[in-house]
Picture (cartoon, each protein chain N blue to C red):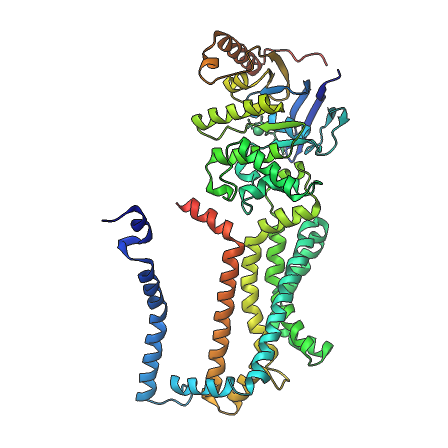
Length: 266
Length: 274
Ligand SMILES: Nc1ncnc2c1ncn2[C@@H]1O[C@H](COP(=O)(O)OP(=O)(O)OP(=O)(O)O)[C@@H](O)[C@H]1O
Ligand SMILES: [Mg+2]
């Protein structure tokens, strides 16, 4: 496939702990194309963060391979940005909002003016153009997560990876941030891999939803979301098709939880 | 009529900021003033040989420390103290960072460090005198060797307890080693390091005085012992007052620097309390 961006092949991860091995990921395989917005949804503790850390080159898989833009991932790739589940611990409190967004650009070959433009542009994209001089801890949770997103946007990654980024913010903020992610995808053509445990969120955001089983994890289902690209919190969520898709994802997760699904032949 | 701006400027109970500053200063000086007045009265009622009146001490202070002793004793002592503090903090942070970030080195050195830390610093003086003679470098070495432990040990602890998510963030954005040190490891260890610096300052002052009490012929510590041996009691007390003032000055500089370096840290604490 020419435009395959990310390729996860028979990934397996076993944690060696003091009380014996913990198999977090059984066998996961999937592909992601350039410019796609893929949601990964799965029950709590099923290994979503583990999967993302393997893809991001932060964890070494026990078995299997990951390729990004046709290169095997062995360490953190150059062209990938992460937005973590714990935004409070991912921003550096001693740096201003601007300092945080600028930090990953410091060692890249560009002059100060260009760097400054990238930062301005990213802050504007997330609606924080006036907060550059504030410190992260002076902002609300939702705004902090926007800073983390701005940092990733300024980095201009080939793929943006987000780990349950909105799990800890209130419903209204969450809706705004979801629309921000959609906007980044539509307007900037960003490829996004978005992990969530929220079924509605995965259907609303994704073009594809990959359903994971409970641990030890494999891919339970891979569903194309055939909703129009222009989405709206009220009208899209009210569509009969939205409800159908949501029900489908929900059923798959229930089946996974009951352990009904059979592990696919690798 | 009061506008919103007015309400913002005046503090609780409607006092202006100026008034509050004055009140704060009054609070701060009230106890010292009362103590000095009480001492004055007491010294007037029943004069004591070993506790001269504050006026006698103040006179001795001006005559002793602002005379030739300023260039012979005070300035050399304080210069040694200043240089030694800078050295102790620099060595402590540098060595602490290396040890803290190198697990095998840390495990290797930990028992040794525990042992050296447990030795009371003043016993270093005979050792260093033997090794280096009675020189300025000996005095510097004694102060540094006695005072750098808190910075060293706190830096080791500080740099190894960097938050795991912050570290993963740095890895995923491929920050260079130098960037990680400058923007992640050292700032996140800064609160611990500052705790160490505070202790280092007080130990350094103690070590400065003690290093000058043996086998020397100048310096603040030497002068105080000299006055005591020659029954110049008011002069002796004035030296103690001078040391107290130096300590207060160091504490003030520390607070000034700490407020700036750890602005974010205090800011977080304030937001958490609110
Ligand atoms: N460092 C580790 N050592 C041992 N076991 C771990 C480690 N990290 C995660 N696990 C285990 O692996 C499994 C998957 O964890 P992971 O955090 O990847 O799940 P998750 O889907 O991201 O969960 P959540 O929805 O809570 O974010 C869990 O059973 C967890 O206990
Ligand atoms: Mg997780």
